[in-house]
Amino acid sequence: MPNLLRGANPLTRVFMMFIWVTPILASIDWVSAAVSLVLTLIFAPLCGVSWARVFMAGWFLFLVAPISGISMLLYGEPSGTEYFQWWLIHITENSLSLAIAITLRVFAVALPMVVLARDVDPTELGDALSQILKLPSRFVIGAVAGVRMMTLFQSDWQSLGMARRARGLTDVGKLKHLLTMSFGLLVIALRRGGKLATAMEARGFGCTPPRGGARTWARESRLRTRDGWIMALGTVLAFVPVVVSVLTGAWRFFGL
Image (cartoon, rainbow, N blue to C red; front, side):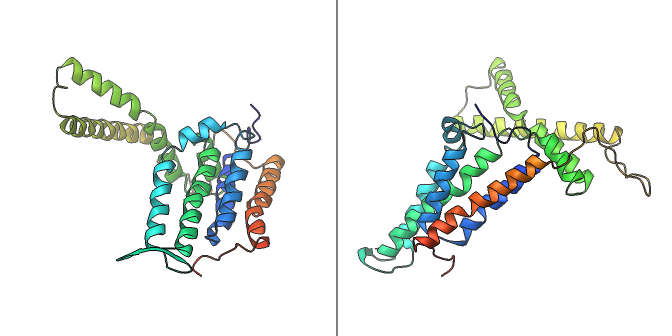
């Protein structure tokens, strides 16, 4: 499967996340959200993420988006033709339009994050944040280590479940079992975090470089020409929904 983002700097993906979503947040019309969503689905396979993987990773959006749309449908600002009214509930032409726009906007904002964040290596992202954006190295290294440890939660949960089953401690209610497992996982995470902090301190990750010196890095992170082309293309595509919305007369500035 082709992947236009293969080999790109992680900061390029972060820039794409920001520039892709920001323009459509300025409006609450359904046209810009729909166009952005269509562009996301078109370019997802070209970025190495199949449609099946997109929908599997974003399954929770099918629960969140309708809830947002229904609340706007029932309690949105009443305007235009009124279809139904009862107490605080007003279903009007305006609230119906807002409900459609908000539902599409949830998908248009979240799905690009699913596509762009896929296969991002935390270590490479940490290198880019420290070397290119010059963020504090201690903070970045700690965050990267924390993200690495999060990948162990699933295996810890399975190991803890098998250990409890072997001891015959699973014959309890589902709620009690969930609370006990969660507490056990918290204890494991705290112990591992303490050991990790001690190990990183012993290896010099917490040391401040000498005055006038600079921290060294095992891997160099820099932006290349290809990253510039990807950012430029992403910027142009990010404003396509805005242009289409303005030309069709659907643009509705947020807050108006």
